[in-house]
Every structure is written in C-alpha cells, then in structure tokens.
Amino acid sequence: MTTIDKTMTIGDVLDAHRELAPFFFEMGMHCLGCPSARGESIEQACRVHGVDVDELVAKLNAALAK
Image (cartoon, rainbow, N blue to C red; front, side, top):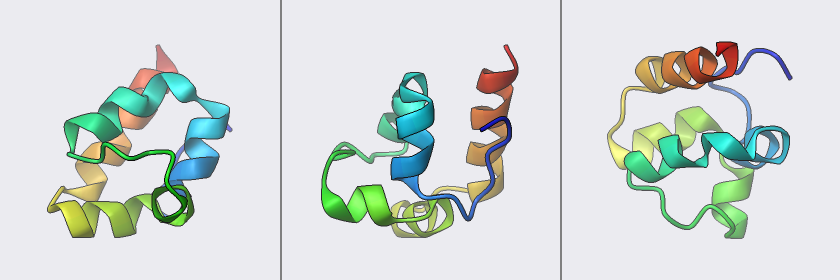
C-alpha cells in the first residue's frame, strides 16, 4: 500500500502501516482493535469523530512519504 484514500478501512491501513496509529488516536479514535474500528472506512470514522477526512488522509500520506 503506497497511497491511502478515504475509502480504505482503518484495519487495512493499520495492518500495512501500524506506525500510523497515532494519527487515529489524535482524532479521538482510541479503540483501534475493536471490530467496528477495523471495519470502518477512514471517511466513516472521520464523519463520526468530526474530523476533516481530506486533512487526515493528507497527513497519513505525508507520513508514508517520509
């Protein structure tokens, strides 16, 4: 996985890149291991937590580019 988009599930992203977990913690998503979190898309999670999905995806991709 080289680019992350908002339709990807959080579980798939974290399976490939565990180092990105802090970005989800920052948005208030602290139960990353629960079934709901693993199956939610990044877009769904952002909607629930009141986070700008485009901003989060940009941060995740910037972290991967380093």
